[in-house]
Image 1 (cartoon, rainbow, N blue to C red):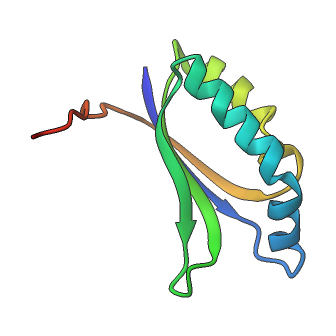
Image 2 (cartoon, one colour):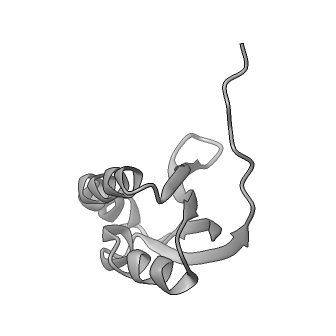
Amino acid sequence: MQFVVTAMDYTDADAPARRLANREAHLAGVRELIAMGHLLSGGAILDDQGKMIGSTMHLDFPDRASLDQTLQNDPYVKGKVWDKIDIRQARIVPHTRQN
C-alpha cells in the first residue's frame, strides 16, 4: 500500500532547535527506509522564507499498521519535531526519466 504523509512541525520557539537536534538520526532512518524500498520520495516543507516547517513523504508499506509503527519510532516523532501528521492512502505515479 502506498501512502502520502504530511507532517507539520511544532511552532513553539524551540521547535527549530529540536528539528536540528534530531535531523541526523531522522536522516539515518530515511536512508534505511530507502534501502528497504519503503521511501518513494520525500523532503522538507518550507515556508516563504525557506525555513523548514514540516515534511512530506511518499511511502510504500504492506499495511497501515507497519507504517504507523515506523512513524512512532521516527526521531522527529520521538523528539517532538512533528506536531500534526496527516496520513492518506495513495496511488503514486511511478517516475521514469524521459530523454
